Image (cartoon, rainbow over all chains, first blue to last red; front, side, top):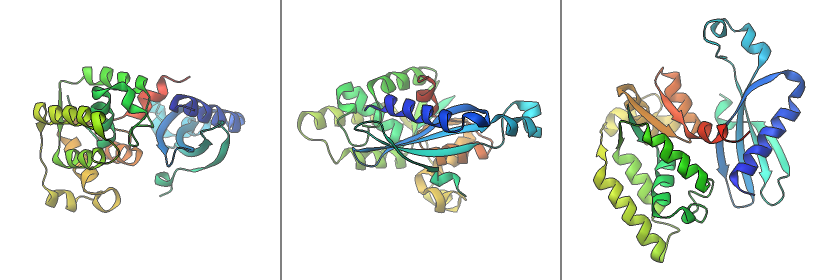
Length: 91
Length: 153
């Protein structure tokens, strides 16, 4: 599985999991490959209701709150193995 | 606007310049595709200038020194030398870098890149923590992953 397939798989997975939360601005943030077997794809997104409640967003349209999830994908078959908050976004 | 390539994007440029076929074969670039290399070239066409810093050159050298042999190594190192000879360096002392708030979190190279981002240099990186550090300072940077992601619907 090449990087673009893995990225698409991760974006599709996020869209499915958070489908009922009105997520928007879904974008790739980081790609890693710890070894040849596993892709770590970090996807960022915002929730529509968070954007609407942000005072900043009223002026700029840019959300001040954004979520970052790292999806582990098995390269061999595209199976999603796990999803967790991106390490660098925890602080 | 002058662009500074972070180590990860510079590796893609150097290895891709040598041969696009090497990108998927080399440990430090195999997260990228040939299309990503073309995308990086497109992005760099928008730059008024490309500059570099000694710390990025050193990190790039360290990574290129392992995992490449024979003809591949010759091609890649010839491209690396060409880049070094043709690219202006900008400087920030390690002492200044070590006093920056990012030093203990991100290391000396990223701390210096963050400092230089204040001087109208746009850092092109695949490193999300560095990207957010620069944006948090109110300066400009390009997360190359955003460019890759936009191509994937």
